[in-house]
Amino acid sequence: MTSRLPDDFFFGAALSGPQTEGCWKKTGKLESVWDHWSQQDIDAFYNKVGSYVGNDMGNQYRGDYKIFHDLGLTSARTSMQWTRLIDQTGALNREGADFYHEMLAAAKEEGVDLFMNLYHFDMPYYMLERGGWEKRETVEAFAGYARTAFREFGQEVRCWFTFNEPIVEPENSYTEGNWIPFVHDFKRAVTVQYHIALAHALAVREFRLAQKEGLVRSDAKIGLINCFAPPYTKEDPSAADLEAVRMTDGLHNRWWLDLAADGTLPQDVIDTLAARDAAVPARPGDDELLSFGKVDWLGFNYYQPVRVQAPEADADEWGNPVFARPYIWPERRMNESRGWEIYPQGIYDFGMKIKREHPDLEFFISENGMGVEGEDAFRDESGVIQDDYRIDFVRDHLAWVAKAIEDGAKCVGYHYWAVIDNWSWNNAFKNRYGFVGVDLMHGYQRYYKKSAEWLRRVATTRVVE
Ligand code: FCB
Image (cartoon, rainbow, N blue to C red; front, side, top):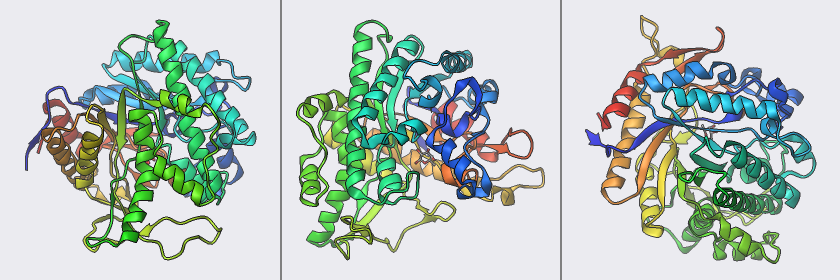
């Protein structure tokens, strides 16, 4: 099947500072929660590979932008690290700022428009010690960091984002307790989720102010990136199954979509949370602050759908409210390495939901990709990884993107996660996502996989075959 994307549709790479830069002790960088956790318990990371090196992009970015250019990619999104840009007193760290100025200039030289996100799960450790997202002080500190970043890089960066996947920390760090600080408390998770929403809104306010003052270029825009997951349930759902969908959709999707599109939070979700002893810590005046949360466009990360049904019990083993339990769709197809369902149609379904509910809101696919374990097994005689599974994955998703655009969705581009293999939190380098591999045994050297050639064709012709 052949699909075509519009001529002005852009292709690029999705990445993040903490997963690529490395240089963890250089430029006066402070410890993030990942650096701290790596230091404390390296066994928690696959093959004992901690956060320190990323994929060494901090040293190799010139070559990496050349690779992007060679593959026909015209933009890339990374993130600044709060711990590199700002010192412990809240002031700009000049050495850290220069690191990013140089990176931005190098990207530009290769014709790569570098989009800049401000936060990708990488809380400074000293902020976590002060209570992290559970505290209003952190919200204010984040707004201060954003203000500094906008003013320092306002003439260089065109596309800004406040957060990547803000739903992940409330879940992984405060409900499931798998990530530092290992908490299993839904009430605290709701506080974290609410404060991140406020931090986003305050950062957008800072952006608008700096733009008004002429400190941010007039063509710049700001957005929010989330891993939106279209929620599905059984074919013949009960009222309780539909209720499970309402709250799952409410906490994962609508919370962030409403904030980004309208500057509000979904009232039905707020009411249910209050009824389940997990009220948001709202203060008078917050609604006005949240109204600044309206963005210029949205990043939609898509990996997998979420399939839910009514829970069996109201509370989990820690006494936290449970709103849903997984529903295993009999026809599901899995990426076994990652344990994630592959369902390309989800990208269409959610794209159409954005179109239906917020017809004016422009968006792009800000992450989509396939991580596979043990890719060396796919090397041919000449040593090239034959990753046809990756080509199939991207082709199928892009076909649904093309259809969504045909049907009126305002989807303007696609960033693949991650064009070059990188470090993935606890999984470190277990699953490889890249069209370009990284050889950990030989100086993090880059090498092309079969799919790189295919990507170049798609990115330069916009024809997907
Ligand atoms: C996403 C994250 C990104 C990366 C991919 C595989 O959820 O945004 O950092 O780890 O998953």
